[in-house]
Image (tube, rainbow, N blue to C red; front, side, top):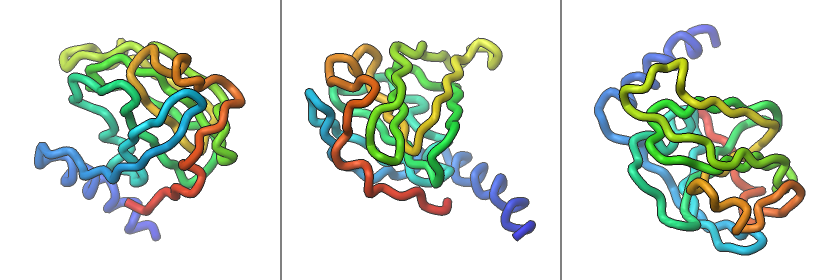
Amino acid sequence: MMMLFSILPVVLCIAMLDGRPPSFSQMVARAPHAVLHLEVADTSVKREYGLMYRSSLLSHHGMVFVFSFDGLQAFWMKNTLIGLDMIFVGSDARVRSVQANVPRSTLRMAESSVARRSGSAKFVLELPAGEAQSDGLVPGAPIVGIRTLQAKVP
């Protein structure tokens, strides 16, 4: 088991060094006032890469980050070039909290200036900034379709 942990950072670096983003599967989920088209980040490589280097997101499109446990999840928005709403969702598929209008970063931004956000969640949705409220994503709101997603080992 110790060897797995020493190899994992090397695998992550190799996967990201080739310059290509990982391949994300797609899913559709339902918010109270919108149908959401989401890319699924269900491995450590996909969660680490996330929405980096994207210059835009269509309305009602984003990403769902799937974790192996329901608890504190921390995000660092390094190389995330678009502003986002981050929706922290429990294993019961109900919104716990919303971090609205998380500021974008730039490629040359000092690491100390890059936005960080955290919250308790099993799932975290990232949508274009300003969209969560209009989609009805407020604490307690259900999100239909994500409950069966499972985190995968790398």
